[in-house]
Amino acid sequence: MPQRRVTIESDGASLEGVVTTPDGAGPFPAVVICHPHPQYGGSMHNNVVAAVASSVVARGIAAVMFNFRGVGGSDGVPGDQGEARTDATTVLAYAAALDDVDGDRVGLAGYSFGAGTAVGVAGEGLPALALVSLPLMMAEGAHDTLAAYSGPLLLISGSEDEGSNEAGLQALAESCAGEATVRVVAGADHFWWGDEYAIEQAVGPFFASALAG
Image (cartoon, rainbow, N blue to C red; front, side, top):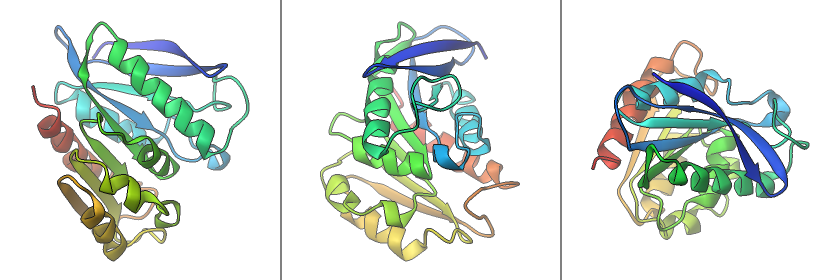
């Protein structure tokens, strides 16, 4: 799996990122992955981010991981969710412009804070969206956003996640204009330690289907 480090300019901040592509020749579909909250140690070097990345690369899809501003080698200080959305939007555009990526097939995934950020940038042209452990307290206003989103949506959380519950996720899914799937993994909590395989088995096939040529 070829991997390269990249620098992405986002509204005055240089963001560090990593692009991992499948073996073979592109252009490949791609998935941009938003990491959890910087104030709680979140970065692209996270077990859930890694699980999402490995699951899509194994299915012929490039993974684009990055650090929000102020995290790791990215410039600046950790910002609010508005700045995080700016960064995510910028990275989506960056990924779509890569020579070895099919710009019409770039999906978006987010975990925890990254999932809340991803909801805020889900636009009409986004071909697929996966939200892992979306905190329902961050989903205020998401009903309206998802009501306008017609692409396929995956909502996946653990049954022991205190910030989420199946009823709340189902309500979000029902507000979505497109096809939405809810997966609740028995026994998993918000951090997914030891349950990363369940993420790989759900997220990888979701994007493989949604981003198929």
